Amino acid sequence: MIRLLLDQGLPRSTATLLADAGWDVVHVGDIGMARAPDQHILSYAQRHQRVCVTLDADFHALLALSNANAPSVIRIRQECLSGAKLANLLKVIWPYIGSAGRYGQRHSPYNSGTATAHHRHVAAGPLAPPLALLNFRVQTPPAGP
Image 1 (tube, rainbow, N blue to C red):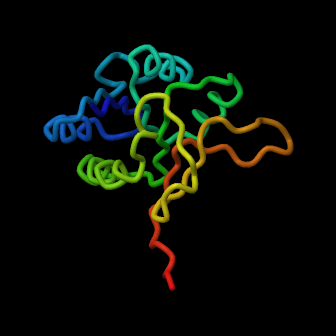
Image 2 (cartoon, helix red, strand yellow):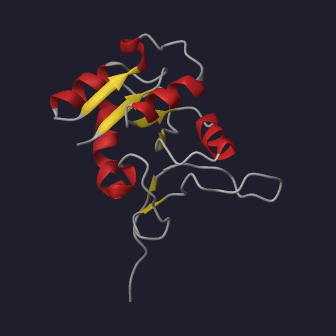
């Protein structure tokens, strides 16, 4: 079952729309965490085995710097989405995420020609690549021979 925790800044109506579609979704505002620090939100997601969906880039850094292997995080990079548009976006990208979107599982950035992603286990430091967690860019597959 898909278990999500929607971060502050994302529409609460998304949780209702996805729940109507059979997803198990909680918004931080509905559990008294609307003003909670990011680390507390990540801890809640970990304790309750939920994938965290956020607009914030710092969630990735917090996980990488703490060397945590959970929770999984999906960063939404388009602000001001309506609840319906965000729900639709999550429904569209979920098949590309596959098992990587499940709580705490790894994902290879190269196992799909239609989505790219980097996993949370990235080195931190001056020579490290940019941090990203299940940060998907849906694109057209390259033309084959």
